[in-house]
Length: 310
Image 1 (cartoon, rainbow, N blue to C red):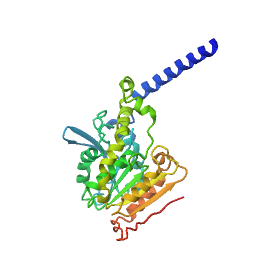
Image 2: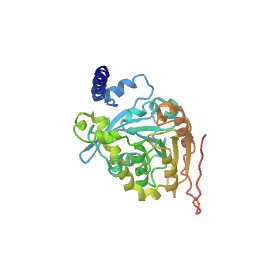
Image 3: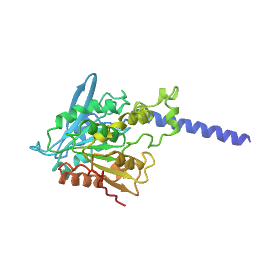
Image 4: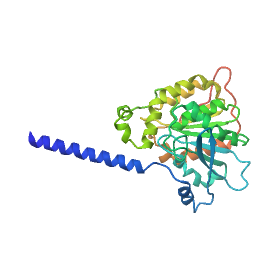
C-alpha cells in the first residue's frame, strides 16, 4: 500500500511539473508574428505582404495585404482567423502564386489577437464585426469581395455578411461555429475561468477561453439577422469535427433564406482542414473566383443549391 501511495504521489508531482512546463511554454508561444517576423517569412517570396494598421475608437487593428503590381482591379479575399490564432494562420495562402494571380489577399488579426491589442478580449461577435468594418469599407469597391472565416472567424464573417448584404459577394465558412451551442466546451474551460487557475493561464489561451464561454450568447445575439445574408455561401467542414460540430452546416443552411449555398463535407477530417487540406481550400476559392458574379437569390419556394462531397 505504501508503495502504491508513493507511486501515486510521484505521478501527481510529474503531472504538475508537466502542466507547469506546458503553461510556461504557452506563455512564450503565442501564435503570432511581429511585423519583422512577417518580413523575414516572406523575404524570398515574389509577392510580399504589406502590414497596415487602423484605429477604431481606442482599438488598434493590424492586417496584411498581398497583391501583385497593377492588381487593383482584381477581387479581394479577406481571411478571418479563429481562436487561439492570428493572421499568420493563413500565411501559406499568401505564398500561393496561383491565388495571387487571381486576387488581392488580406488577413486580419481579430481584436485581442496577434498585434491587434494582444490580450484585450472582445467576446461580442457584433462588436468584433463593427471593429473590422473599416476593412469592408476599404475594399467595398473591389469587383468581387469574398470573406473566408475559419472556426470562430466564421461567426464574425457571418456578422460582416449580415451587415453588408450589398457589398460582400461571397462567404466561405471553414469549420465555422455558427449555431448556438453547436460546439464542444470542455469542463476545464470552466475551471480555468476562475481564480486561481485564471491567474496562471497564458493570455492567448485565456482569450480563446473567454470567447468560448461567451460564444452561445454571442451567436444568439445575431440569430435574428441570418435572413440579411444575400451573399453566396460555401460551407467546408470535416465530418469528424468533434470541436465545432458538422451540424453547424445544417444550421447555416436552414437559416440562409435569401442566399444560395454549397457545402463540401470531408469525411476524414476533423477541425484541421486549413492545415491538412490547404490545397483543397485554395481550389474552392479559385472556383468561386472563376465565377465571380453574385449568385441569384433563392426562388420563392426557398429552393437553394447544395453540393455534398463524400
